[in-house]
Image (cartoon, rainbow, N blue to C red; front, side, top):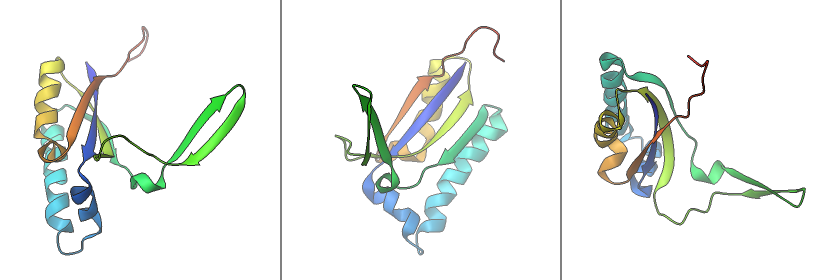
Length: 120
């Protein structure tokens, strides 16, 4: 089953991306995590995201498009990136989510990817 892992990091962890002294150690955990998923054959895709301040929020109400700077989440954690993995079941996906560096101080959501008949 395909599962998307959405890695939401604590603001202080997200800030390590801009810390020259701590960047290598911070990214080293992420590289090791990606390498482990690749080695186990579950990795399909993934990417880090730009900071939340770069987001744009779009809505359409009564046919009128509204575009705002965003996001404005109710949580302090910030969506930092995602992985799409292929696991046997949600228990296996939860195991990978628990190993994600973001799980230490933030949260990792594991959500099945909807698959339609005829898709590979």
